[in-house]
Length: 400
Image (tube, rainbow, N blue to C red; front, side):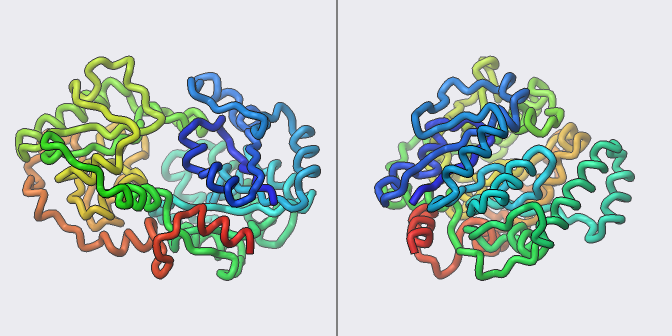
């Protein structure tokens, strides 16, 4: 049996670990990676060159769709294609050709949604959605792309041109419900899993909860998400917020948090962030990459915008402060921050307001956590599944 991962970016050691290649190989699977970055994101690659890209005979980088067709045709038998291109999002003009190729050669593809977030509620009808886009001064191009996505969705629902996923591995989130409802997919195609963050949480717990030094016992962790430099901004052609201004505002907010709470703010750096060009990023505070679960476990409080890593704060029952800036509001990013805050039973704080600190209590131990359990069972873990990791469930079900 062969498993082929379809990816839109070159993979790094982080993805090799995230996708548990070694574990899957140990279960008897041949693992291949189809790197479609040059077909889907050629321009974005130029501005986001990763220094630690993994190379190997099992990775194929495609230069043309004819080459992709040939490979899919060769490998369609006894193979599952794992979609890390769009997941539970709608197909668009950028990726639709890939899925037409999968359908043409009868390839079985699987979706693994192991890190869902709350979704924005949009108008239920196409007409009302277009009105909303026009009201927000969206360009004609955005309206056109929206209509194309709806046409592709119609074709998928009516089993025309585009394939349905063979199986969906997911938590019971709203985005899953929307996905299967819009495409008229049976719930029997859905296999419950935990999130990958829950896998990391279990690994941390099974390692004996690594010892916490005294200087780590009074910290506030900021869950960085590379807000001003994330590589997906290039892919989606989204104008990012001004990095210098963002870092200054966040630093000033951290100063006040430290004064009011007595906690030391530490930055849990996003895997794709790069603050080397800023010697005093976040006011010169300690920036740590690859230790998010350990830092949250040791913390007394967490600050965030809208990141899946909030799972750790929920699992460890940490008080959370959700923040946004005026520029995030202006560029439309704050909708996602507000959505995340609401899902946690909180309200996002606009730290660009000079009087923001007057509107909250800094007694963080009293902050509400009543929605944590609801959040946990929608986005972090599946009930009655036990403590099996994502790829254990995947390997078991694919084998059967």
